[in-house]
Structures are given as structure tokens and as C-alpha cells.
Length: 429
RNA sequence: CGGGGAGUAGCGCAGCCUGGUAGCGCAUCUGUUUUGGGAACAGAGGGUCGCAGGUUCAAAUCCUGUCUCCCCGACCA
View 1 (cartoon, helix red, strand yellow):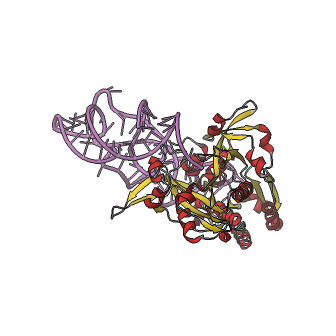
View 2 (cartoon, helix red, strand yellow):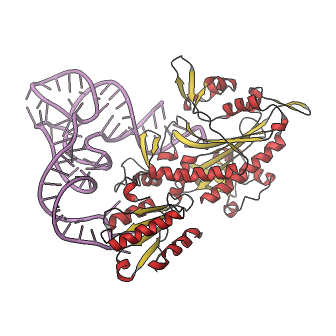
View 3 (cartoon, rainbow, N blue to C red):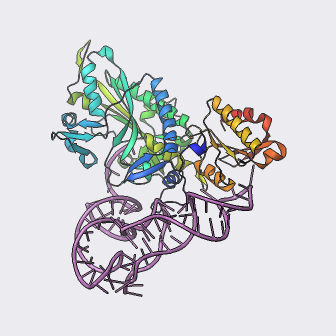
């Protein structure tokens, strides 16, 4: 992508009403635009980040046999009356009346709908287990939206749902999702910690949240600091059940609090095993060897549109964003400081084409702007690698490769540029 | 929902107290000179002052109402 052809409306000054660092940087880098309170447009740059996340989420879900589908955003009140949540969900639910006076709503979540779907099609224990997910826009009419997409009313969520034959199998599925989430966040470059959450109305159920620890986070969690450098991916169910980490709600209920420390954090994922709560209210049962059984269900959410903000909170400096490789809207940022010099521009064009041909995401700043503006835009946007082609290209046939994170710069000869760049993108530093 | 603050050019703000018909910086456009860290000079364009009433010869300014946005707290991915 050429910068001259890509719409990135960067701002020099911060919007006055923005308090959180990530919110500020997302607006200044032209990633998002507020439409009204808690509702945002994702501009081209921001949408690329979102797509990186979505692609990774889809990849890992698909390879784990979880079926992608797409349920509608608008739901009928009927199914919510069956679960009795139409009356209890409260003002957070955006209610809509259509021209025939039918009560509709903009879905805040999809347990009811997936249960109705399961009930229609799943008739035998031989059809279990089943796992579904979709990535969809949700609406929750938050009391107070804030911090940009961090606490938005309209947001994009990945929600998955599982059906199992019984609690034991349900727990197995739950465990799989637990590990899937750790792997996913790990691959996104976001170090989350699993946290036990209150088990809800029905006793014996399971719930964990996945939090990113950052001082600017909205949530508070309590944990044994031993967990901070723990690898959870090989945990067994009983270890998961007994994690010494707690959401603040849960923390109030427990005893033996002395060795736990409090951290501020951002909640990025939440998984529940709620059992037969919805399947039984929908009279959803399947035939088995032992007669009718009510499927055991779970749901598994990830706040997709919150992740970019969380990543920025984790990683930025005074000049702008510093993207982890997995989320970065581009892998390389090529900066031509001498577009009037035909040799320099030809070289950049060629390098740009060659990198593109290798399916590496590159943005090429071919604009007729001064160096200072190009550098500051590049730092603001935060692509991990900056390739700078300027004076030293003419003088001694060299270009610079600069790492956004620590400003480490190396100069390399033009002849080796392509190989070196590919190598640096591939490596894991 | 309670408490606080703000709506004036695309963005950031001044002007309001003490009414006289709108200004600054950034951005944009034109020209010249510049070009390795948000350039300089010269010129230009852009605003029914959130909206609706009212007071007045005259309202961005005073009064009333209303809408919106933000911040702090109790709810949530």
C-alpha cells in the first residue's frame, strides 16, 4: 500500500476530551472516529488491525473444529422471554420496535439464539459435542461509555458456544477453550493472565476471565504473584479450577487473602460453563442411550474491538504506538525521504514491489512531505520496522532499518536490503 | 442515574464577566525558497458562535428551555 493512496488522517494535536493514552493515539493515528457516545467508525488503518485479530481468531477456532457462522444483530424478544432475560437484562439492552409493533432488540449476546438453533437441529447425543462461533457487532447500552473503543456501546465480539452431552464433557470443552484462549492471546503478542470469575447464579459452574495487566486498566484483579510468569497452557482442569487469581467480585467472597496482590487490568476474554441454564428453559433435549438428556452448554467471548486499544496501552511511547508484530497494520514501513531523486525513488519502488510480491504487508511513504512529517507519522502509526531511504542512499548506497520499539538502527548496503528486511520480519525480536 | 465541566472554522483554543455583528495557532489552497525529525516567508479560502425561544435599536455575549459531548462514581466484553 502506498501512503499517498491510503487514507490515514493523522493529527498533530490530541483531542481535548480524550483521557486514555490508547484512545488518544487511536484518534491521532486516524484509526477510529467517534460517531456518537460509545460508537466508533473504524478507519482504514484501524480496520487493518481489527482484521489481523479476526484472521488469527478465525484461524485458531477453525483448526479446533469450532464452526464459524453469523447470527443477526437484531433479535426477536421472543427467545429472550423464554429464558426470562427480556425482563431481567435491564437498560443495557437496546430495545427496538418495528413497524408492526413487534419487540426487537439489538443483541448484547447470543445464548438464547444459539440455544434455539441447537434445539432445532441437534436431536441425538451422536450430534454432540458441537461448537460454534461468530464474530459480530454487539450493542450494550453502557451507563457510561468511555476511553474510546475500550468501553464502547457498540463493539465487535467473538462469541463461541458449546453443546455437550453432560457436565464432564462440558468441562473438557471448557478446558479446551481455556487453552485456546491462552494460545490465541500469546500469538497476538498480548500476555494475558487467566482469572477466576464468580460462577454466577447456578452453583458449580465455571467462569474465567482473561486479563491484560496494565496500570491504566479499568478492572482490578487479585492474584498470587507467582502466577505472573506461569505458563498456563499445560494446565489440567483441577489446576484451572484452583488458580489463585480472582476478579474483584470474586475476591470479596474468598478467604485467605494475605498473599494476593492487586493489579489493574483490562478484561479481554471471558469464558463460562453455565450448564443447562438455557437448554432447559428452551426444553432442549436430545436422545441418548439413557433416554432424554439436556445438553450442557458454555459460552466463550473475546472483546475483539477492545484488543487494539489494550495492545496500545501495553506498548507505546511519547511518539506514538508500538505495535506487536502480530497486530501491526503493516509489517514494514518504507520511507522515501528523497522522492525528487529519481534513483532513490526507483529503488524504493522496486523494493516496494519486491516486498509486496512476497506477501509482506508494506506501507510505502511516497508522499511529497518533509522528512520530519514522515518520521513523526511513522512513529505515530507504530509499524515495527521502518526502512529509511534518504541521503545515505545517494552518498554510499545505503539505507537504514530502524526498529520502532527501541530505535535501534542499522545501515545496510542497498544490494542486501531485500534479504535483510525479510530476515528481520521473520525473526521474533 | 447522581456530581462536575464543555459546545465558537477540519483540530486545539480565545472572545462572554462589562451586548455593537468573530479572532489566534495547527490544518487546507496558491506562489517562492526549502528538504535525515511535525519548515520559512507572502497571500487566500473556510464559521446561520449546538438548537429553540425571549430581552434589546442591537445577542457568541444577558435570560429561559432543550439537545449533545466529556470527566468522576455505582454496572459490564
